[in-house]
Image (cartoon, rainbow, N blue to C red; front, top):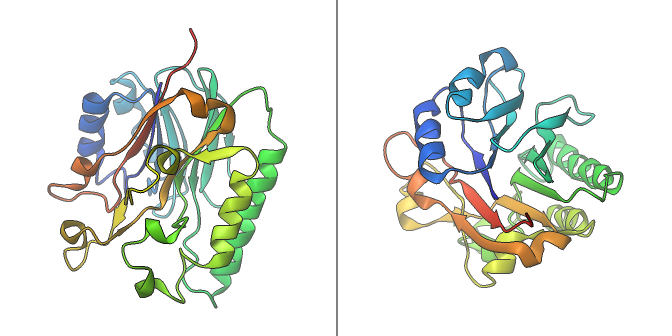
Length: 253
């Protein structure tokens, strides 16, 4: 199975790109973030024409998460206690797939930063209550660069969000529930940036962050065959500021 994650930064603005990418890359499951539409405006029928069932959680112009699957989609769960459209989970074939859009945090002294840490902690607690018989892939835009290797210039982010010790500790606590960062496991020394600012030619200069993560149930790690950041999807006119990331997992049967 190929499971991908992509912060599409508006499904309405990127629908043609999304459709083309699905045809070209053929993921079995795609986890989307920042769809920026309400449920009624999500293009479920267009995606069904490409063979994908979909489940969406969105309230309008902010946030929004979705799961697209061509291997089944059942037992959908939407949202955490904050009431925002930042998490959706479903069983797709033999896997539990969860799409996350972690709050940005804004600044270390902003109330949104404390809310970000609480959100990550609630996600961790949710993991502890899971059905452990169904392996999970928890993926999305975490708005946390796990280490300095995941940041083009750590000195430029001193005192900023995305790289602070509490955020990284919260992410580590989530992984300690039995998850492995698939990219870092497969590519111990490669930055693997997945986000680049639209400004100042950041993409062409490769001034990026690795904040789009695929956290794979530890039991699945021996079955991981490939992890790819699709930089081509970041090129061309009007791209998302994020690139899709996918993992290929060899499953029995």
